Length: 406
Image (cartoon, rainbow, N blue to C red; front, top):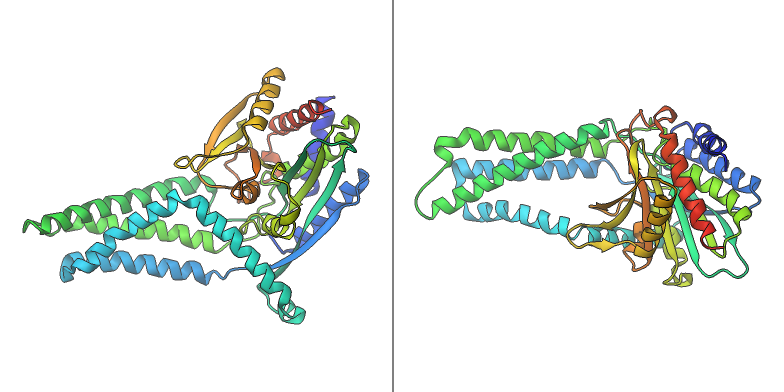
């Protein structure tokens, strides 16, 4: 294979989808049409799996913001004036509950996915006109193409997503804001606990150091509330060239070359909609076809190939519980990468951050290939920031993987 030719073909798809593709928007519909046309050009009869969902209101984020702010202000007032032990215990208990939620983040995601199934069931029973007249209702579709060897020995799902999401704040600015907000909150709670304990010995810390409590409390409110506002109110400016036109382009070209290689596999190439708003597309597909899945079915998400090297494979999510991805696949692509002199790094990821998680959290073999990016969810997620070398390397690893299964 000629590397320049591969890169040109891969990058062509990215430039052809160089426009915003927010879930449910005209841009997303345009991308769905393009993806379908390429599958058709490569000899497939793509399936269009249509579904709908109601978007959540930004008011929810505002409500949580009000609750969180009120909680911290009430705790500060309690230190200064009320001295109520019930409020003190509540203030100290909240961060413990937050820690438990973070430790159990996989359970939260699994419940979220299960909740989608119930919403889809309700939607199917709703009157069509009622849905269509509601501006918060979005109709979307997953696009599926299937290759199948007559004597296949293994069934793979290779997935990406074609919707985009845009945040007003660049992703690289999120981390310092999170760190400042989290450390301020942590410092405030630690001092609060110290003050709470000292009360039992008729001692106090707050009176002479009230300004420290006040500063930490205000920093926590300002920075963490700012994050909630940014997450709650989204725009439609990101072109999603990295997240996830890179995954789409690789899948489209793999669907073409797989017919030349002819591996003894059944491969479902599926490009999901509405991943960014909470795995709606993959959740719909999973619950619609749940009874037809074999536990040996393997799901591989290519999401996303960013501009920051090296290529990575996710070994596990939730480092505390260590929910592992399929080790056999990870080892196989690691050997391929070594043989092709491609750098491939093993990493652990905190949360289940792509469509593969729908299957992983339900006990299936699943894997996630990606590399880091500083530009996702922003106006800078554009073709000029795509790392063509990493894009081509990822494609070549999968081609060699198919050759191993001839």
